[in-house]
Image (cartoon, rainbow, N blue to C red; front, side):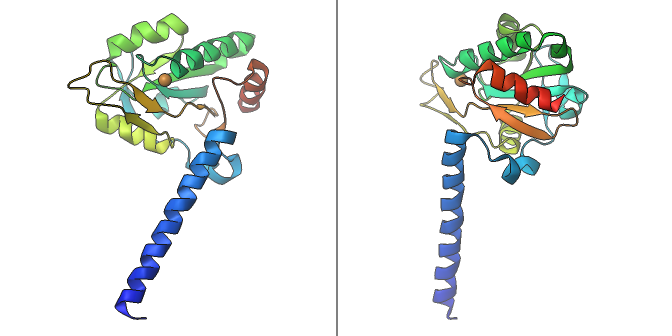
Length: 199
Ligand SMILES: [Cu+2]
């Protein structure tokens, strides 16, 4: 192959990869992640700060089934809905709720300090952890969970900026292995069934 042809082939291969990535992401938004395809790739090590100001890692939550939800405290819609859903599902679990840890991770660390996270998570569910961190730490954990987020506008000039973000609630088993997702709109029954599978 000539050098130019090799370059064209490389570009075509890269574009195909990007197209497949976008198609998978769109499919996930409609259907939830295809469990069999990405189960091994969702989640991973992280180092963050909890709502009490303690440094925590994924290991701190092992031993319980974990519910991870990513969002931000200034969110006008998806986050209040998702956290209310989590609180309802925890109540529906009855005694098994003691074996489940809900964890809310901020995608807006600039405004979501540990103190802000504390009053927010305690408002929705007292047993929930609220995690935040540096911009780099948040970017790393979002990448590990395949979470999309994007700040809208310029925080320097608009303190009321919004943050777009994906809205799945991830269910991980006691060892941190991915089990499945439900959404803020899911029926409580379906979410409880999924969580019980992980217990
Ligand atoms: Cu939100």
